[in-house]
Each structure stands twice: as C-alpha cells, then as structure tokens.
Amino acid sequence: MLKFWFITGSQFLYGEETLKKVEEDSKKIVDGLKLPFSVEYKLTAKTAGEIESIVKQANFDEDCVGIITFCHTFSPSKMWINGLTLLQKPWLHFHTQFNESIPNDEIDMDYMNLHQSAHGDREHGFIGARLRAPRTVVAGYWGDPAVQEKIAQWQRACMGARFSKNLKIVRFGDNMREVAVTEGDKVEAQIKLGWQVNTWPVGSLVKEMEKVTTPEIDALVNEYKKLYDINTDDEKSIRYQAREEIAIEKILIREGAHAFTNTFQDLYGMEQLPGLAAQHLMHKGYGFGAEGDWKTAGMEGIIKAMYPDGASSFMEDYTYDYKHELILGAHMLEVDPSIAADKPKIEVHPLGIGDRQPPARLVFEGKAGKAKALSLVDMGGRLRLIAQDVNCEKPFQDMPNLPVARTMWRPEPGFLEGLECWIIAGGAHHTVLSYDITEQALRDFARIMDIELVVIDKNTTPISLERELMLSDVLYNRR
Ligand code: MN
Image 1 (cartoon, helix red, strand yellow):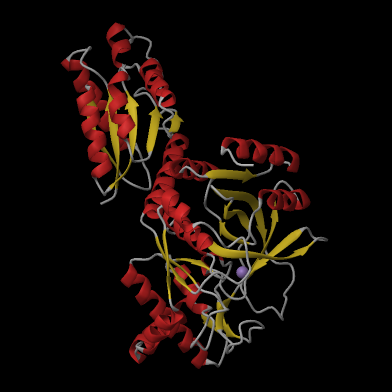
Image 2: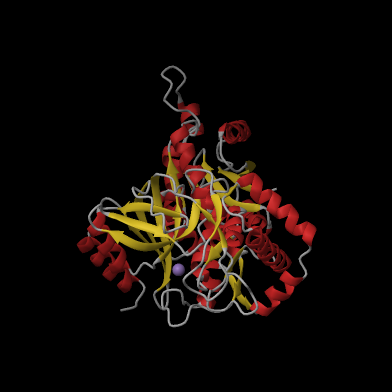
C-alpha cells in the first residue's frame, strides 16, 4: 500500500520524558491529517545514524511515495546532512507546531523545551536551503484544513512524480510528418521524467485486432451503452471501435504502459481512426496523444494519476472567436468524456482527413469552470511545462456541422494577452486541459522532476513573461 512517511526530528538533550511526549504528539498529528493518501508515523530521529538509515529505507521502499519531516524540538541539522544528501524521494518540510496557541498558565521552561518548532524547525529549514535540496515547505497548524490541503496538493504532485518515473508510453506510428512541437528528446524525457517512450508497429496492433472475439466486443459495447447515449444506426462502426479499444488495451497491459499515441498518417490495415476507442481509454485513465504526441500523452497520464476522479482531457486549440474572445477547443475525435457537461452521445460521421471509414466518436460539450491548459515542450536541453489559467464556458453556438466533442475557453490574463503569452512561451496546439490541478501541485511536480515551469495567470503580462523566459534561459545556460 502506498504511503507517505512522517519523520519527526529531535535529539537526546531533553531526556526520555520529552522524547516520549514528542512521539505521542507526532502520532496525534499524523492521526489528525485528513489527506487523500495515507501518512504513517515512522520514528522520532535523534541521531545522524537513525536519519541516514530511515532515508535509505525510504529510498528503497517501493511503497514510500515521499517523506514529511517536522522538528518538534530542536534537532541539530548537521545530524541530517548525511541522510538528506542521500534522499531520492520527494520531501515536504512541515513547519507546524503541536499546539495552536501559547497557553498562559501552562507555559514554563519545560513547555518551551518541548514546543520548539519555531526555532528547531528553522535549523531544519537552513539545512534544506544550504543543501539546495528540492523541497516543499508548508507552514501552519496541523489541524487547519487549509494547511492540510497544501499537503494534499503536494501528495498529488508526488503521486504524479511516482507515476511518471514508472511510465511507459506506447507509440503506434511516428509523429505527424514535419510537425515540430510534438517532437522531442526521448532520452532527455527518460532522464528527467522517467518515461520509457517506445514504438510498436501499427501492424502489430492490426494483428491484435484480428484476435479480438465477438463476446469481448459485445461486453465492451454493452459498457458503452451504459455510459453513453447511442445516436446512430451504425452499430458496425461502434463495434469496430470496440475492437480497436480492446486490442490497444491488450497491448498496453502486456507492455505495462499507461499512455499511448497514434497518428492518422499511419493507419495501415485499419479501417477507422480510433475515436470512441481513444476516448474511452482516456476515460479509463490512460494518457493519450494524437499525431504521435507522446509528450501530451505522458502529461495526460500524469494528471490522471494525480486526480484519479478528476476532469482532464487531451485537447487542441482549434479556432478563435475574436469577437466573443473565446478559443474553440476540440479535436478530430479524441476528447476525454471526463470533461463532459452532459451525457455524451455516440455518433458516426465522416472524417475529412486520414482517408478511412467514418469513425464512431463521442460527441459532447465540455463543462464550464476554471481549468488549466498544460503543454510540455522541448526547448533543446530542457523540458518546459507551460500552464495557463483558462475559464471554460459552454459553447454559445450549436455548430450542427461539427459533430465532435468540443469546449470553449478564455485564457488569462485576458484573451489577446493570454494568446500572446502562450505564443511567446512556445506552447503547443495540443494541451492537457485539467479542471483539477492547482498551481501549487504544478510547482511541486516541476520541482520534484527538475523541469522548467512557466505559469501564465491573471498576473502575467507578455512583457513580464518575456523577461522571465530570458532569465530562465540564463539559468539553464542556453540562449
Ligand atoms: Mn492534433
């Protein structure tokens, strides 16, 4: 079972009685944390040896997702150097205190010796800074829900990081011919993010499709019928999509992969571009990228690992309405129904691209609400994750001749400036649209993975952004 480890810092200076109390209080804190992923109190560390040993265990333990440290008393930080320099798991320094306020009558020198976070934890903070250790610092009373929410967002970033380090991405076919932004250094991506990005011939998928049985297709079509309204008589096309989905998923399971790409330019031996198939696989939690876009596929998988019940999708900025200041987001087919405002419909329509039969797809409108558009681009020597705040709105026109899943949004800091910022940062036309991810979780994730993060929000201007990117180039020693 996946766990976060809670380690309390102390020392022998204050005697056994104090150490007993430190342990009791630490356990109460851990019990009082209401978080999406469980936390286990591991120990009160009193020596360099204990710290080094617990860090080595955390590194080695597959189920340890990250460590949370807190110094109840003063815990001299030279003791922490050898351990922390070995640490390979994400670290949160929880700058809390057992008591919320200072008791008037109770406070005496014993109390002062026990409740020392205000200075003991600064020693801990110094060594984190001195080591330049990547860490998330959360300050506040442990019982405060707002404080706990910060730990929760860090936990989600850690879950994303863990998923990323184990992620395998299956590519059916290459990137779309001549397209730049969907390209990238797969070796760099594996070094930084852990992704194993490899290709499988489309022929192997076709072979797998041929092996799919009628009962398997029946079962999946029944599932479609439970989840979606059928708005077509073309059962054959729906069944063909089911065949594709089953075959793709079998290969993903066999390879231990949680994301995949395909491309309409390489459908050799296939009758339809996977539409409904790709959409339902996203619904199941697989990351997906069209046109060979493995970077968006990987990010999509990570967001789903961070927010398993959330709303996120592969998305494409398609066309603008300058008058209403909105971007129409859609794709040929492949938008995840987790962002749907209402029950999606299965429809079959011709596709003006790819030279294949009309594919079944889910048609729906995306829900209104605040979201972030995420794009991972390769800047040559480094990966840049761009995140823009967007406000999704219900599409204001029916668009009866555009039978695809679609949504509309207005980017921050405003429509035109938002577009300018996105273009200046080099953001792709493909994104992951996430309704759940917070800025903190993004920053935590980028820090853990050691990649560049560019945030475009209500406070960004094209001029401030340009300056930030220039500084960033200096930082990464690349101009
Ligand atoms: Mn596309």
